[in-house]
Amino acid sequence: RFLEREGLRFEGVIDIFDGGPLLATRIEDTRTVRDSIGLPFLAGDAHGEERAMLSNGRVEGFRCTLVQARITPDAVIVAPQVLEALEMEDGQTGRVRSFDV
Image (cartoon, rainbow, N blue to C red):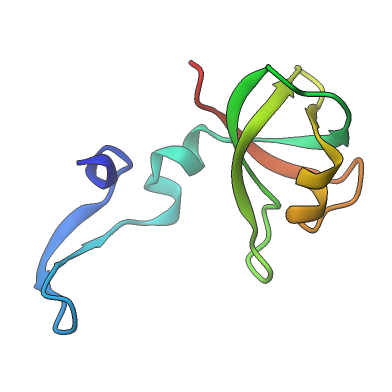
């Protein structure tokens, strides 16, 4: 049901390799993508703040993680190792969606 809440729908096809249903959606119809915003990511202390899904926003070399972050109207503050995992530099813009709302 999680995938259906995200906007994926059964296409009436069963996968021949695992026997599971084939679900599909358009990227812009996926809830997490639609609800995410672009903000600069800054290295700092974000311990104990809100849980958020962050991505580097790239197609080639896409990286995504679920971490604690401090989201302000102007930036997302994350631990330096998060930027490293996302293969981003301090101040680069990525995509963020809070999961504490």
